Length: 146
Image (cartoon, rainbow, N blue to C red; front, top):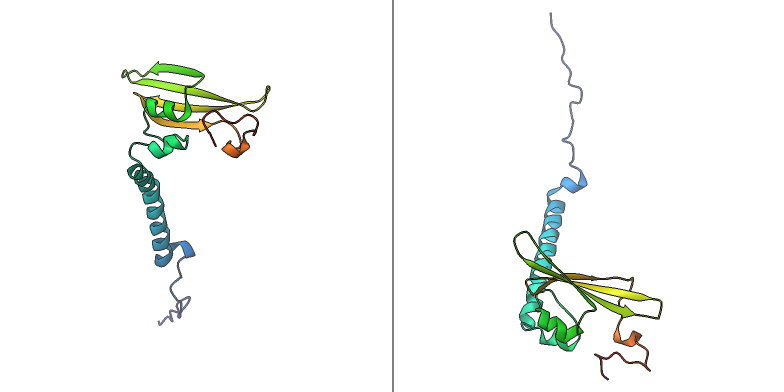
């Protein structure tokens, strides 16, 4: 008894991998991710090295992570409120709250967070950031002199 075995697809070609699984595409994606992470880590270090004592930031009334409380006071002045807490490990944490009155009924807040006297982060409440050009000409900002 003889049987004739026939393959289902005698000339079947290997299946081509999906677009994302192709080697050149994966290489491009990985290189892009590595560049992104490097820029996220390296760029702040470059900025810090170009202005190690934050004098340019202070002159431009900007704050940056890593500043001391004294440097922030020189740049922005004193906050309206300071909330102080201690972690279970005894680390002193402070929240500084600054108020920006846009009118008698509208106030925006800026929050800065310190650990052991060093600025660790912050955020601005509002949809837009105020710039010097946004201040009324008849009431100039006390920190910005023409």
